[in-house]
Length: 255
Ligand SMILES: Cc1cc2nc3c(=O)[nH]c(=O)nc-3n(C[C@H](O)[C@H](O)[C@H](O)COP(=O)(O)O)c2cc1C
Image (cartoon, rainbow, N blue to C red; front, side, top):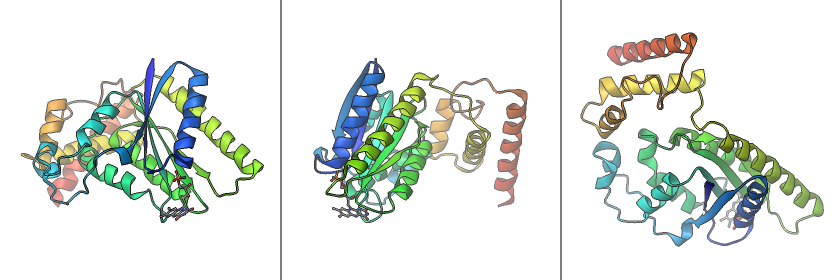
C-alpha cells in the first residue's frame, strides 16, 4: 500500500485542511492508500538563523534543536507527499516557509527521488497561482516527481458554483497524482533534468572539495553516474550528458 503524507501550513483545521482531506478521499477512491496529515503548527520548528552551517559543514551541526529530522523522516517514509498552504500576503504561510527553510540543505543535497509530490494553495482571492508555481518548483528542486499543484478559493460565503469548481480541481489533481504515483518511480530524465544534474555535479566536483555537498555527491556515486538514480539513457541523452559536463567544466575554469 502506498503511503501519502500531507504537510499543512495552516494553524487551523479549515479550508487548507479540508482541501487535503478531500484530496485524500479522492485518492482512496482510486486505490489502496494510507494517508496522514501533518499539521506543521503541531511541531516545533525553529526559524533559520542563517548561519549556513548546514550548507558548509553539514546539517547535523545546525544549532536549532527542533523537529526538523522527525519531519524529514516522515517524508522519507512516504511514497507521496503534499505541501499545502494558505495564501498569506501573496506567499506561503510563515509556518510553511519556516519548514521549507529548515529543508534548505536538501536543495543542495536532494534526496526525495522516486517519491511523488504535489502542492495545494488555498486563498481568498488573488495570486495563489504564483504560489503554486513556487511550491511546485520547490518539489522539483528537492528531487520529487512533481505533479502540477492546484490553487483553490475559500472566499465566504462559498457559492455552489465555487464548491463545484473546487471539487473538480481537486478531483483532477487527485487523478494526476494517483497516476504518477502508480507509474515507475524513477523515470528517464528530461533533457532539462539531465542538464541540471550534470552541470551541478561537475561544478560541485571541481569547486566544492571539502564541502558536504561534495562528500554527499561522492558517497552517492553521482560524480560517475548518468543521473541521480540508475537509468538507461539513449545515445542522444548520453552524448548530451557529456556535453553538459564539458560545458560546466569550461564555465568553472573560466571563472
Ligand atoms: C494573514 C493573512 C493573509 C492573507 N493574505 C491573503 C492574500 O494575500 N491573498 C488571498 O487571496 N488571500 C489571503 N488570505 C486569505 C487566506 O488565504 C484564506 O482565508 C485561506 O482560506 C486561509 O486558509 P485556512 O482556511 O486553511 O486557514 C490571507 C489570510 C490571512 C489570515
